[in-house]
Amino acid sequence: MLRWSTVLARIGVGLAVALLVLLIALPLLGLVLRIAPGDLIHQLRQPIVLDALRLSLITSVTATMLVIGLGLPVAGLIATKEFPGKRALEVLIELPMVLPPTVAGLGLLLAFGRTGLAGRSLDALGISLPFSTAAVVLAQAFVAAPFFITASVAGFREVERRYLDTAATLGAPPLTQLIRVILPLSLPSLLAGAAMGWARALGEFGATITFAGNLQGVTQTMPLAVYLALEADLRAAVALAVLLLLVSVVLLLAVRTVAPRHRLSSAAHAVRHTP
Amino acid sequence: MLSATLHKRLGGFELTASLEAEPGTTLVLVGESGAGKTSVLRLLAGLERPDEGRIVLDGVTWFDGARGLFVPPWDRAIGYLGQDYVLFPHFSVFDNVAFGLRTRRLPKSAIRARVTDALEQLGIADLADRRPDQLSGGQRQRVALARTLALEPRLLLLDEPLSAVDLQTRRTVARELRRVLAQLSCVTIYVTHHPIEALTFGDRISVIEAGRVSQTDTAEVLLRRPRSPYAAELLGVNLFRGTIRAGDPTTVVTDSGAIAVAGIESEAGVEPDGEVWLAVNPRHIVLSVEPMSTSAQNVFEGKITELIPEPPMGERVRVVLATTPPLVAEVSEHAVTELGLRPGLEVFTAFKATGVTVYR
Image (cartoon, rainbow over all chains, first blue to last red; front, side, top):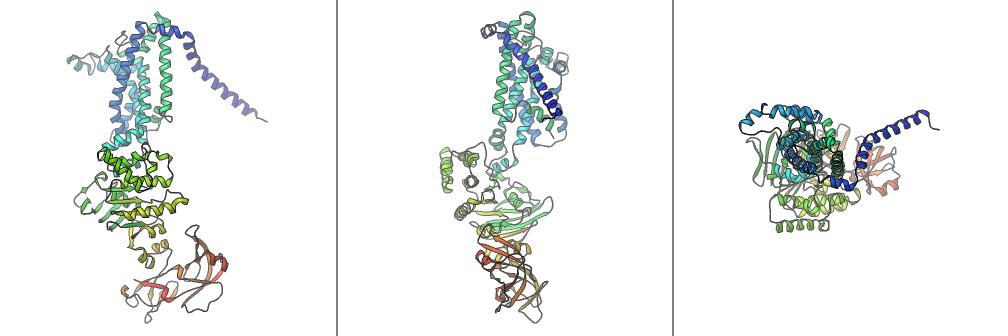
């Protein structure tokens, strides 16, 4: 005999699962059902779509490279060393994860804008960032960096001391230990972090439109094009959206294959568990 | 030749050890876990820095506290075999063994030749393409040893090299390890908590207690003349501290009664009424369930408190006795059955005065 409380609890959980699946799956279904495969390919040939696609690929890949290049040494430092101000540095790095993107964009504008904190010096050098492709890259790097860095810190911390000790006794100085032991052993985390950062860069909207504007071929990335096309050409918007959805699904599956223990939640996990 | 004096403050105690070992020999460090054995290895390897002391190998100084000299581990000609062998999970067996050679940037053909040699030396050439997670404990140990020996170390450090090998194959792996060590021309330091391993592998054996070396001797001397209750307990030898009775050099008075001895070993240089150690080999103690008429001068009576098979699952049995003085005898499994020995049984023990080793 099942007790009433058990039955009620089961119904409650079942209902919650059903509602949550509907909440997430229904919009996705709405997108996919809205457009026929043939029309999708046709729509993707439109100049506005092609421009956005090209720009998004270039900027998000550049931003990801920038994040990896700057993030690896920072992650290594945080994972291995204790120093004054470490907590503050960690909080600063994680902040873009929780900051509303439009706030980030406004901040970037006030920092690197023509009259901004650093903008004036840049202006004197003849560099103007706002409303340029470089601004898009900066906005994307700003929001993507914490995803990569937190995953990398977690990956570095997972490399056990004994592997480094063993490498050292086999004649490997620290640089060799880094290249031949630390990086390969933490590669799944690094790849997962890079993929998460790239996904975040690819989907970046708020900071980009605030800091870089919405110029087709210059700063209009795919998410911006989706929003713009919504008013003029719904079918183009849907085509772009479905494309972004496909990329997201592929990325997610890739991360789960490369680093089954990491998944997309590990960045948030790493944030919570940073001692 | 290794010559080291090490001082290091550790968590609970202070480690102080002086070690000397000749090339081609094995020095065993034996002691309980937590006595500081692994710390000694890590200090010798350069994985930790001593607070004070000196480490010199074959005339090369690796550490000198007074001069502030410290050679990092990667510049020491060492081989270090950690307790769990620590194979790199992202490399095949071949690449694991090649790791150190590649670090030295040797030409590819030379690396291949030396890796193959090392694998063949340990009889594991057929494992070259395996991944570490496809190996048994004994195989992992050999791969780790091959990886170390491929670099031709001048100092080989082994930390409980048999502990991660399962019991069934341990005997084979131990025999193989002895064969390999016998061929080496380097100094080997072998850490274990297992007395039998210590006696089998050690050309000389250092007993470590709470961060201090209490005795360093050959297995033979150690068994005959342990110099601390701990060493005696470890080796399963009956050990007593006592004073030679005044005017009677054949009787030694201990806290738990008098023991007849044949006389003081001449080289011991014991003065009358000086304090001495008495060691009695458990195999020299005779057991009987009835009173004995015997020429042995030391006869004691008492209950059996415990029967311990030695080594575990072996054919010898250690009989712990509640006699005064307390004794441990060692008899065959056959004798246990024959005499019906069991805990609680009242028995008689006897050993000859000449069976007692007396030393200072």
